[in-house]
Length: 194
Image (tube, rainbow, N blue to C red; front, side):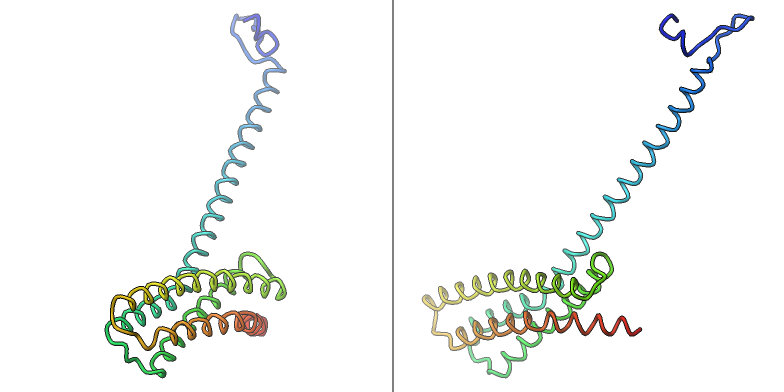
């Protein structure tokens, strides 16, 4: 009780009550506790928001890579079993892959414009970085598939489309890189109008 002498006082009837300093301390303690709880809630909400943004970004990356990787794998398998795909068929497959990449870019532009960049310049820069990252991932997988095809060719029969598929993959990636700023600019102009 000696240590609590500042906070507690004894009434005339012998009951212990909070002194004026004790009451002020309790008010201050409650304010600190409310602020701590509010800060914890704010930090938790902010963390949940960032986790949601990151998960959504990985979803967009997955969608952007799904079409070209599916096309590359399909064409590679077709080259191994029936190496007589026409140039028109190959071009159609790679156009489908490019279309999927552009669709992913459109999703990214809306994502970036909503969460991060409100200016068109910044949005174009972000989409260019996104396009470069996607292109590096795409080219690395195309290279792996190409190496697999070459090693398989050494064991199996000669494949006529292996070089063409590699060239079309490079053209698809270059087209994607070139279209990224144009797509971003077009979407930003369109959304500002409406």
